[in-house]
Length: 60
Length: 439
View: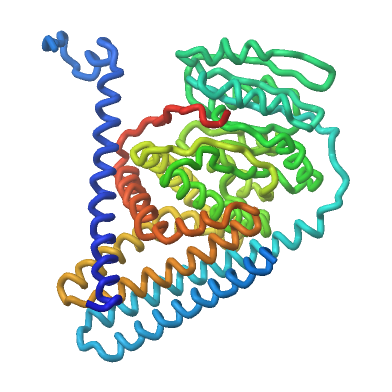
């Protein structure tokens, strides 16, 4: 395998992996923010968001 | 002797870059001529089109940036202005890890007439108490701490402006530490009555990881090439949060900070340009700031910036179509639209096209040539910026992965942010946790 073919394969692999990594990283960020938002909710805020009279918590 | 050797190495390096570019362009052309695949021909044309766009962008920015440098050198011996009262406003929300260092750097400013206002935007930590210990009042200098319930940065800034005495308003982020001469350098531009605002320079203080080094390179390029070039025509499009100075009368004319976008600084700058004012950039007024040191925090920052800029563009979109009646704002808006939407979409679309083509036809050489051409441009651009700022030249080596990895990941986040903004998906401010690196 000559240098050009090796570089072609390498850059193709890096480009492909970066694209996949970029998409995964974005969704990881969104999931983290969603989780953070849920963790910082007060009982009243959660109640307002759910629009229900009662909220039930499971014992951790 | 060492200096001479450095120059020789540098010249050889530049010749190598030139040779690599020639080799890539020559082989791409050969590939175009010899291939029978229609799609490969398209790919080669695409590479040339992209390259042409990026070369034109680089050449324009570099050309104006060099002109600005020459102009600055010619203006160097002007008399210092010290009579204007400058009110420095530091909006702070949960900044207890960094507020002390930020305030100390403001107290150490060389400019004599300074009123510092720290505005605590309803922090839940000890920001207010810590800032309060620095309060003082002397003849021409004072520091006071105000507090209000949490309502966002733009409202905090406007509240502080209401209590300000200065005819020049300087805004500083609480996570930034200023160079002692920063305020003095910014004030000098206001001798020209047409100047409504001056953007300061931003440097990454925590250059201790791969990610923060890439951001440092990005900041250096963004400021010394893009902002410097924009400053030549006095149309800088964004006053950065870490450091900027405004003429109070001009702010009043455009209604101060608006509250309907997440990029209040960009929105205000656009409003000033639309009113016919000029915006400058001062590369020697430096604010040191903490860059996100993990990828998810970086994406969070870029997501907010992108959506904020898109909101500002959307709000001012009517100016896009006024190239005759208001060419300045129209030009700035088109440039922002290109950088915020067109370029990220084109780059990612180009990547996807190349991957699909390489996998389906087995021809992937053009990816190498594409990468070589872009990387040579990035390295040379980085070197130019590093040389004029006298920064460490080794930072230019990071340009090798800058476009293929860093910019691609950032552009993917920008594209998602654009899609979410298009569909009006709710977003929050997304404040980053400070690490206290600015000390």
